[in-house]
Length: 103
Image 1 (cartoon, helix red, strand yellow):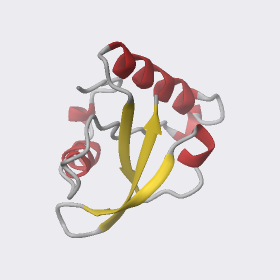
Image 2 (cartoon, one colour):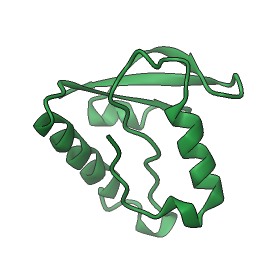
Image 3 (cartoon, helix red, strand yellow):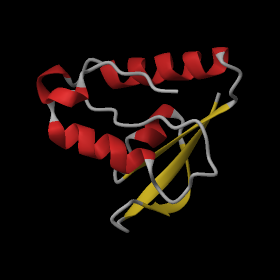
Protein backbone atom coordinates (compact mmCIF):
# COMPACT_ATOMS: atom_id res chain seq x y z
CA UNK A 1 0.00 0.00 0.00
CA UNK A 2 1.49 3.35 -0.99
CA UNK A 3 0.08 6.87 -0.85
CA UNK A 4 1.99 9.11 -3.21
CA UNK A 5 1.30 12.78 -2.85
CA UNK A 6 4.40 14.15 -4.58
CA UNK A 7 6.07 12.73 -7.66
CA UNK A 8 9.27 11.54 -6.01
CA UNK A 9 10.62 10.45 -9.39
CA UNK A 10 11.44 14.10 -10.00
CA UNK A 11 13.61 14.18 -6.87
CA UNK A 12 16.24 11.43 -6.98
CA UNK A 13 17.21 11.92 -3.32
CA UNK A 14 13.60 11.32 -2.25
CA UNK A 15 13.31 8.26 -4.49
CA UNK A 16 16.44 6.82 -2.91
CA UNK A 17 14.97 7.50 0.54
CA UNK A 18 11.75 5.75 -0.46
CA UNK A 19 13.57 2.61 -1.55
CA UNK A 20 15.79 2.65 1.51
CA UNK A 21 12.98 3.09 4.03
CA UNK A 22 10.70 0.53 2.44
CA UNK A 23 13.51 -2.03 2.68
CA UNK A 24 14.57 -2.06 6.29
CA UNK A 25 15.37 -4.94 8.61
CA UNK A 26 11.80 -5.20 9.95
CA UNK A 27 10.00 -6.70 6.98
CA UNK A 28 7.84 -8.63 9.45
CA UNK A 29 5.88 -5.39 10.05
CA UNK A 30 3.23 -4.13 7.63
CA UNK A 31 1.90 -1.75 6.31
CA UNK A 32 4.55 0.98 6.23
CA UNK A 33 4.02 4.73 6.22
CA UNK A 34 7.09 6.10 4.47
CA UNK A 35 8.74 9.21 3.16
CA UNK A 36 6.68 11.99 4.69
CA UNK A 37 8.28 15.24 3.63
CA UNK A 38 6.80 18.73 3.66
CA UNK A 39 8.83 21.41 1.90
CA UNK A 40 10.06 24.06 4.37
CA UNK A 41 7.89 26.84 2.95
CA UNK A 42 4.74 24.79 3.68
CA UNK A 43 5.62 23.69 7.21
CA UNK A 44 3.69 24.90 10.24
CA UNK A 45 0.31 24.30 8.56
CA UNK A 46 -0.26 20.77 9.93
CA UNK A 47 0.14 19.28 6.46
CA UNK A 48 2.24 16.44 7.89
CA UNK A 49 -0.50 15.68 10.41
CA UNK A 50 -3.15 15.75 7.69
CA UNK A 51 -1.13 13.35 5.52
CA UNK A 52 -0.69 11.00 8.47
CA UNK A 53 -4.44 11.10 9.18
CA UNK A 54 -5.20 10.37 5.53
CA UNK A 55 -2.83 7.38 5.53
CA UNK A 56 -4.33 6.15 8.79
CA UNK A 57 -7.88 6.39 7.41
CA UNK A 58 -6.90 4.61 4.19
CA UNK A 59 -5.16 1.81 6.10
CA UNK A 60 -8.12 1.43 8.44
CA UNK A 61 -10.52 1.24 5.47
CA UNK A 62 -8.38 -1.59 4.10
CA UNK A 63 -8.71 -3.50 7.38
CA UNK A 64 -5.39 -2.71 9.06
CA UNK A 65 -5.25 -1.83 12.74
CA UNK A 66 -1.65 -0.57 12.81
CA UNK A 67 0.80 1.42 10.71
CA UNK A 68 4.59 1.40 10.96
CA UNK A 69 7.33 3.83 10.03
CA UNK A 70 11.05 4.19 10.40
CA UNK A 71 12.83 7.48 10.85
CA UNK A 72 15.86 9.16 12.30
CA UNK A 73 13.65 11.87 13.81
CA UNK A 74 12.85 12.06 17.48
CA UNK A 75 9.95 13.95 19.08
CA UNK A 76 8.00 14.61 15.86
CA UNK A 77 6.03 11.39 15.49
CA UNK A 78 5.47 11.04 19.22
CA UNK A 79 3.40 14.23 18.98
CA UNK A 80 1.16 12.41 16.50
CA UNK A 81 0.54 9.35 18.72
CA UNK A 82 3.20 7.08 17.20
CA UNK A 83 4.95 4.82 19.73
CA UNK A 84 8.63 3.95 19.47
CA UNK A 85 8.92 0.15 19.40
CA UNK A 86 12.63 -0.36 18.78
CA UNK A 87 15.45 0.04 16.36
CA UNK A 88 15.91 -1.37 12.89
CA UNK A 89 18.50 -1.15 10.15
CA UNK A 90 18.39 0.25 6.64
CA UNK A 91 19.94 -1.20 3.48
CA UNK A 92 23.26 0.51 4.25
CA UNK A 93 23.21 -0.91 7.82
CA UNK A 94 22.45 2.52 9.27
CA UNK A 95 20.35 2.35 12.42
CA UNK A 96 16.81 3.74 12.32
CA UNK A 97 13.97 4.15 14.79
CA UNK A 98 10.81 2.05 14.28
CA UNK A 99 7.41 3.44 15.30
CA UNK A 100 3.94 1.92 15.47
CA UNK A 101 0.58 3.69 15.30
CA UNK A 102 -2.53 1.96 16.63
CA UNK A 103 -5.40 2.84 14.32
